[in-house]
Image (spheres, rainbow, N blue to C red):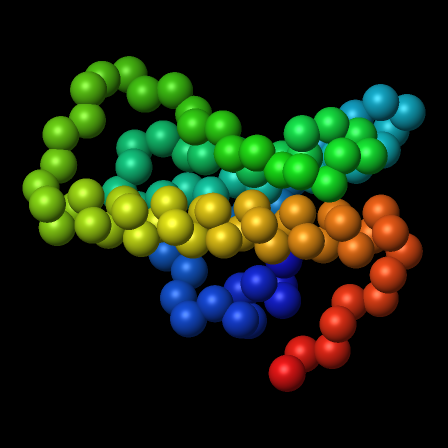
Length: 106
């Protein structure tokens, strides 16, 4: 994930990697993004063991969400970064599953 943060122009909010044990004690990966413009966290995690796909889950909200156009643009930017992070994890998972070495940085 640090590769992602180093490549990112700007990563809004806070990103945390949490220990998340799956079956047989395997760390299945769980990443939490605490966004500045959304009053609930989003969680990124693999779809399933051995599956290189990742998905994003939105945490529950207790109330309706209203925001200005400017704040909505901020949220859109944060969600775009979440999508990019999810794609980054999928790429890394595919590399790991294939046993391939990561391509050198340009």
